[in-house]
Image 1 (cartoon, rainbow, N blue to C red):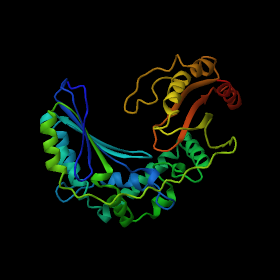
Image 2: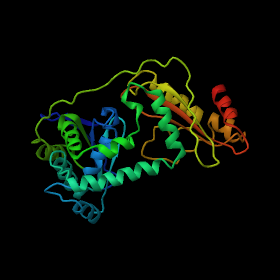
Image 3: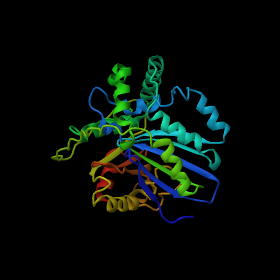
Image 4: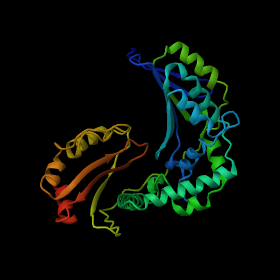
Length: 336
């Protein structure tokens, strides 16, 4: 296995990162676009996530439904994720079957159809997803805290978007968003697994290299003014469970204070926070688990620190014990 990562930028601006790992005959192929809810404004919230959904609705070369069967037949897995700062599409396949992933992602970078009927069908799906989230107390609480913490910056809304926008976004809005951000010079391609770098790079050049350079997307970053003092948000609803979420303005991933804060979070709530695609790590030795759960003030506690382009939030969330109060939990969090 090579110890290093090969980093190459193609002439069309596509950044390619390759890592040979020969421990198993599989390859994982990820393409990341620098677009997420950070790139949205009021009236179009949720559009990045919706575009992600539309990318599974087919191109002339790969009609909808064909790829699911093809990838499953080859023993592979595919998925996609939208966050505040990025959207990524991934395929993990047997090493000898990776060609399909290369061709698929290069094709839907430029040729996705955005069929009007499929757009309306997906509107129903996404609105249903949004309404399902609204049945979760922690979603409602986090959404209100985020909106209170960010009045200027586009981190103020959830990735899923606001219901009013999901009801009014048009097919042409989605397509313009797709064409603006889905360009090789706004993407990073990462491939890791059982391949030889020279051969893989040659094939990537053949498949992706002919895609034309796109116009650099406008960065709509608007810095959030400093918050003058503590804010409190109370969200009431049905049910008997009480949740407490303490949110603190946190540095961006590239700022000096980010990793020290990650260490602090590991001490306070456990070491699993930045393990985005896995889990299973216990937080039972963390300070807040001992101070809240073992003391029977709460039945659960966890932290959240996201690696973001711009400063975001560090949150501590606790589920209050039925026989205790939110104020008791807040006092312990403040003391720690």
